[in-house]
Amino acid sequence: MEVIPDQFMEFHPIHGVNVRLDPSGTRATRVDSFANGVCFSKHPLKPGEIFLIEIEDKELGWCGHLRVGLTSRDPGNLDVVPEYSIPDMTDSGDSWVFAITRNHNKVIEDPVDGGPEAGGQRLGRGEPEEERAEGYHNLKPQTFFTDSHLYIDNIRIPRDKLVGRSRPGRYSHILDDLYKTNALPPTARRSRIGVLYVQRGQGLADMHIVINGEDMGASAKGIPSIQPLHAVVDVFAATKCVRIVQVEYGFSSLQTLCRKAIQKHIVHRMAIDWLELPEAMKHYCKYE
Image (cartoon, rainbow, N blue to C red; front, side, top):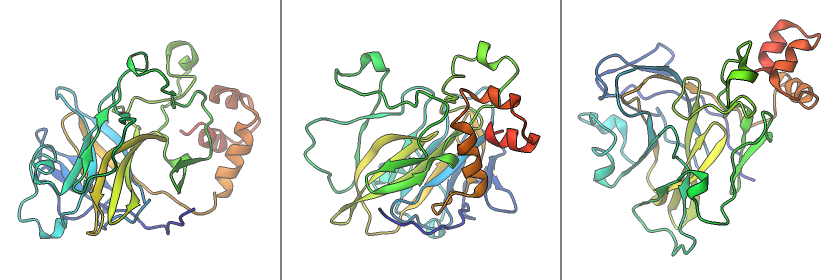
């Protein structure tokens, strides 16, 4: 199992002209129009290291959503940041960017795979479950409480930070069809989306997109990984503001261990309100 050292994630000071970063460099807001919102990670990613963001705000009236991916360009060497990540960056052959949609983000791989090709091979999007080929296994979490870690090949990532959680209301269990899984749509506020790459040997890697704790599959294969790879986040169209979520790869905190112990004995998160616990712990256990 690969060990990934913790690194404080920030956005690169070079970004699109319509982006404003907060003083910490961890929140990016598009302040005008719908484009020129391209951002980069401040440092190149290590193999298996996830660049995770949460959607904080949206803007109605635009068509399209967040885009994430990787680039072998050094942001510091850019004379001009491209207006769009797709197609401005992807057409150059040194960037691999995935447009996040509300429904179809899972990759369907060809069962007859001839192996990765240098330069990066973009794979198709997933389709609704009833339209998929026979033998497909639905990987969507079926319960509110999921496994403690996400495994992608030999990469092990704590799932606790990966999953975006909706704010439960008084009648959530009656009105919200997604309540039982607590699964947010990928483009919703508080949804969490990450990008990472996994080494495939011979200087090649596969790019994976993770949405609310679920691996969408290899969205690009055969990416040259000899050069450093920066994360790309395009705060595009209906996505207005995102913030970086720091991921700890070491041992779970005492808070997290307590939450897991409580969750083992709870049917759903609304039942946490019935426990004799401090209010702060209740909020923490419900991911508020």
